[in-house]
Image 1 (tube, rainbow, N blue to C red):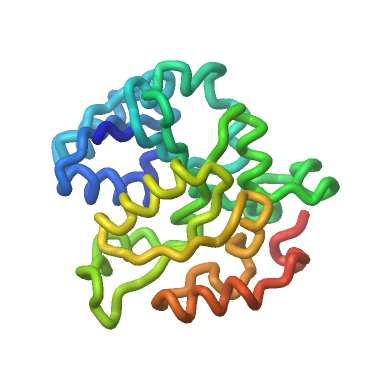
Image 2: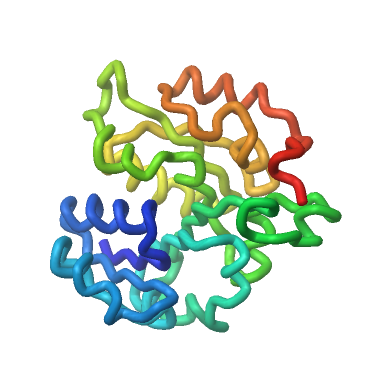
Length: 220
């Protein structure tokens, strides 16, 4: 499958490593340009590209950049993507630590992923936002393993969500359907499932226990 990854930090870099190892055709981009991705490309076989080229022909696009950088993505980013492209949003809003105040999230109560959808004008699937990057490399397990981790996945497009859940299964993790994008507050920073290393039952329970109010640490 052709996959575009925008962001080559901890999550983006390790997804590049795992997805290329599984045989996928991966293009990877970052804000500094493809010339800065030579080492990752040599290590993995991924193709370094500009951000504007990352989605070209892609069946899945992963956006894994700071939330504050999402509005700077090029207009028409997904115009050249494959029909029915699934867009994965791994982002988290950290107003105090990194992103500054985003009024639509703070005042309108938008989930982070709903806000991201508005910026890129395309539905997204929220996944990997509470996953430790190293776990992508170190904790894959075969289906049915007692210690297989589960990841929450939220989104409105059921076809895209199924594609993302299948891909996560291939990566070696179970998934739990966390509802639509308006429900994705259940997996935002400060919630019980955020950073939880557990199986399907515990992840399901953690999602149910979430409170819609943001903790003080994650408010501007």
